[in-house]
Length: 379
Ligand SMILES: *[C@@H]1O[C@H](CO)[C@@H](O)[C@H](O)[C@H]1NC(C)=O
Ligand SMILES: *[C@@H]1O[C@H](CO)[C@@H](O)[C@H](O)[C@H]1NC(C)=O
Ligand SMILES: *[C@@H]1O[C@H](CO)[C@@H](O)[C@H](O)[C@H]1NC(C)=O
Ligand SMILES: *[C@@H]1O[C@H](CO)[C@@H](O)[C@H](O)[C@H]1NC(C)=O
Ligand SMILES: *[C@@H]1O[C@H](CO)[C@@H](O)[C@H](O)[C@H]1NC(C)=O
Ligand SMILES: *[C@@H]1O[C@H](CO)[C@@H](O)[C@H](O)[C@H]1NC(C)=O
Image (tube, rainbow, N blue to C red; front, side, top):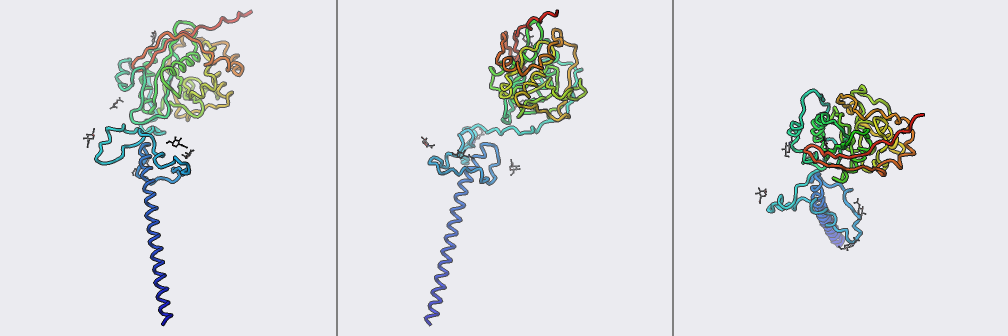
């Protein structure tokens, strides 16, 4: 009798304990999900600001657990106001208060077409090129309207008497750069006077003058007669100094030699300063690109290049320019880069700025850069 009583009591106690456990478990679950929903809320807002998928469950590793700091409360993880979407209350008209966030530009721009037909026989006029490019702003600038590019790119063109080539260059390059989603400005650096041409010094001038105009991170140096034949050859800067024009038609679409760095190249600001810019003392045709190549390798960098199928270029055929005869000293000078690069470069650049004119499709910077020192007389 008493045993039976005892058994029943025990049974009740057990049931009670079980029930208690169940209730405890439920409460735990509720708390657990409550906390997660808070985190979820924070992350959905965080992600919205960056254009990512808000509807996805947040990945745990995004969460910064260093909550031990007194100030590390939840609100401190909410990014600054312009990154946030408005609070999402339905009755509030959010579009008025906050600008729509623009997503970063994709690594591979979606509108590229690949191989291009490039020819120079059709008549070209500056008016036509302007009509084709209504969205380029004064001075030859453009910013993608629908995404945020990582870099701001200055395109520097050394120039003298090549108006005809410039029209083709602008005609082809503006649409290519637009498809590539590049944030860019075009600068032609016009050498005044008829003294010997000095390409590398003009490029140094371009770097300096472009930086006075805007905060560029990347500099692409292009000859005016070179047109890329494939828009997958992206005009921005890379981890290493970039050589773009690796396969020109005039060289049978091949690199003429392993250390070739001519035609079109690109360096970030940091890379450019690391090599003290370009040499100022190469007057006349040739050698300066080899000197730049030497500067890059001597400073522990190496040249990066696109695939040979993508790095194809057409060159506009022309007579050799006057006052740009091959420089006979070039072979000696490129042996000496190691000794000259610290003193001759962006650090020693001297020139006289004569005018800056902003045209619809480019900025024209005219400079006097002096003339070569008198050549030692031969015995
Ligand atoms: C975001 O979600 C949509 C539909 O849920 C999906 O189609 C899209 O690929 C997602 N985007 C990313 C970046 O995950
Ligand atoms: C986490 O927070 C600490 C302290 O605020 C900070 O030093 C650290 O960089 C943060 N980590 C991440 C991944 O955000
Ligand atoms: C904590 O916040 C206060 C005021 O908000 C600030 O003065 C203090 O520097 C913060 N401390 C830390 C460790 O961030
Ligand atoms: C919100 O703004 C849009 C565009 O400015 C407008 O058309 C719409 O009527 C507004 N809605 C409310 C509820 O104010
Ligand atoms: C110029 O910009 C407007 C507005 O963003 C756009 O509708 C138009 O298609 C653009 N034109 C060209 C030629 O890109
Ligand atoms: C650039 O400006 C100079 C100086 O005014 C002028 O002589 C030259 O024709 C201009 N060149 C171009 C391509 O705009």
